[in-house]
Image 1 (tube, rainbow over the protein chains, first blue to last red):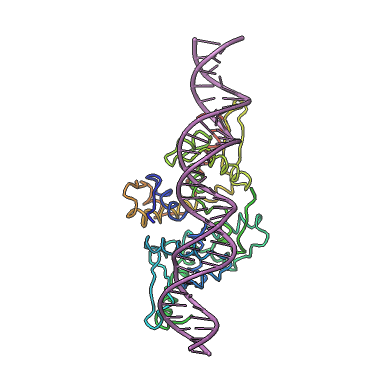
Image 2 (image 1 turned 180 degrees about the vertical axis):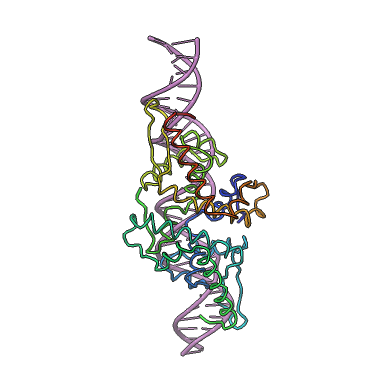
Length: 148
Length: 148
DNA sequence: TACTTTTGCTTGCGAAACAAAAGTAATAAT
DNA sequence: ATTATTACTTTTGTTTCGCAAGCAAAAGTA
């Protein structure tokens, strides 16, 4: 499962990792939809097939973008959590959000609006930090309490 | 060549358009590597196959992200240029650049550094505007002078 | 004017990625 | 002990990708 890089360009190299239909969707689900178990992901709106999910999670783990951990009192359920490298993708997710709001809505009639879009645009940096701090707080809880 | 949107999520909808191996690479080549003809693209480092290139250009045109125009004094060579919708992808390209510099370099030993990365990080917004203004100036020239 | 090259594609075919459904093995709940 | 849940794997397609070749129109050259 080794990544092949097409050339020396940093942007193209980023897309060698992120440039597919699912990787950034999975990151988004973890970051802002609170998904962290295999089952969480299978139940999302995007309806990813389980074989694709398994292979993408493995790939993300190998790249150091997520970690897979077991909880002490549950040997079945694995927790998939973003690393710092994964959290660092937040600005990209936010920019995708903004571009989509302004340029994709006209093409997708059923697209919902994000209520935070105005805040997001007016103060991008604090919004990014907010999402990241929020995520860190949540995974702290998840590990301590073993909650769903 | 109609796009199918997976769900109502704005981010996922953006990735229904941008989430593949080539779309953002082509945008990057136009935006910062000055590529604008079919031949320009085929000669790039990434070495895209011509059938993929043709289909992606068509798709981008249909989505209103690029335009295809002929020059008055050259009936053979088409010019592919970014629309405002395409130019609005600049922040995403810049964020990919930054994430790559910090997180992909360790995985791709042959990756080159961008000399502008420091400027990019220190003043993101002006850098984005600079790229966009630069592009607009260039296409103005290209249309007036019909230069290579 | 004829010829050669360039440009912008299309076609055909094999390989890889993606997708739907079913199956499995380990664990947890009843 | 039985059933359900979770996290996968396997199987069987389908779609996308990628290479090589081919081709037609326009442009350049003799």
